[in-house]
Length: 353
Image (cartoon, rainbow, N blue to C red):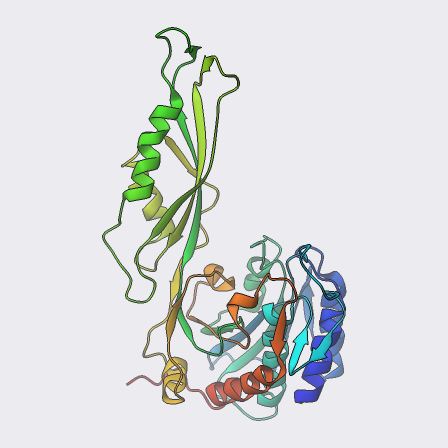
């Protein structure tokens, strides 16, 4: 597979609607493409993967992951989101930047690496449901892949290596009071009780600050209470968005929060942890030697559910993701193919300084 074929595949992906949980048609496309390239693809749901060669138990395994699902197009699109359009060096279309460009770049390098002996096993995965962190996405596939020693997660990072990524907690909080008539000194107002805890969420600063990701960030993003004007509310519900740095595990942070607030606190899940990779990892060192600058990413990806070292890097710009008239520069894909090749060809995962 060469650069021109990668661009043509990306155009076909754009023309194939693939919103999260409904990626079947584009999964069919990826399965057919892998088969046409001479591989034996496997599939679970809308996740499609292939091994570069027969597995060697004595070698470590590298996973190349790019997600094939997209968000739904918003109403601000001027161009047709499902019609790939080349214009002024850009390729427009839904999913071009997030993350079709990464998918085709990784697949191109996968096919090149498969032609030469490497000191590792290699798997390419086109994963589903990333945008909704769905249970039928990469989490459903990881048990099928065997032990993974390192993964490259293709996401738009302007081809800079994201060596750390913030995790996510969404908290549902309930402050309890006692109902009463608003005209009399009755009841205990749950809103007033919630205000104390909301102020804590607004002002509290956790002690551990990441040099790459900064502090844990907590934001109250919704409040609901009351049924009518003359009734003191007995309950006030609010939700909190918590962006977690790699200094804390999610379950640890939930317990620390519960110790500091009066309201009930229930996380919607705790599996979307922050991730980080050793700056001395051989892949990171190679990228630094190539002039790339490691950084900490505030946005989430499949890294959040991968329990092994991962590196997020890919063509495109995160600021273009989920926007109207999404695009990727065509030369960004050419640069990504070369960068992935230089990073992975002959990479020895056992080398440390």
